[in-house]
Image (cartoon, rainbow, N blue to C red):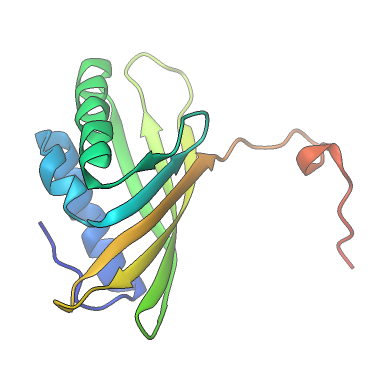
Length: 147
């Protein structure tokens, strides 16, 4: 698995491609290893997943469900920035399910921390569905000033 020793858009995209490959291999242990020991994973509609063992179980189930559903996924890093020992990545994950007419788009933010060994690991993984709004529809039903 690609080891993140610098946090920038190019390195994060390399990591994302490797993470996709590991997902298809069902290697949930390697997937969980990129998180800090005390990491939190916050996925829409699911309870908060805390700690590497629980995150490993989350990805174990995710890999199995994805395999059964014929899931194809693509991660696109939109932005990455680091300052000191903390950083973030903003991404879009596109999911294609066999037999489904439309893709599912997931938006994500990961907070990264450089640990003592110099490797960047995810400390908070936050995601939600990025459904398109209908024309005239406002987020949360509230008009937002765009001044």
